[in-house]
Image (cartoon, rainbow, N blue to C red; front, side, top):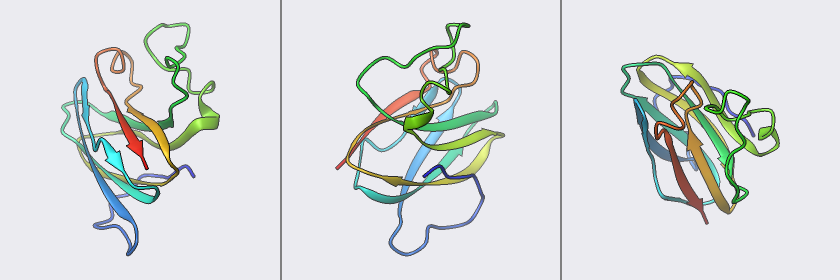
Length: 124
């Protein structure tokens, strides 16, 4: 399920909340989550706009576009779980349905991934 961003205040009953902090060249999120519905609350502390992309990991390096600095989103579309298009600083939310496995959270703005804007989460 690919979610869309919104600015609602809290997750519905039965939906876990995962807090993620983005700032230039850094994403900090939970290292472990339970399987099921999750609302990602992404606090973009800027100063730039950032994306949030959640991908199911296949254990291989992420495929890059010809530019060599951004992920080829078409190549990972089948394992993209949630996306939040570039947003200005502030708190934004996106919902996802997670199954057990490993996932990668990243910002795919030019140069941000290679600058360190990625993190992993294990879902059990």
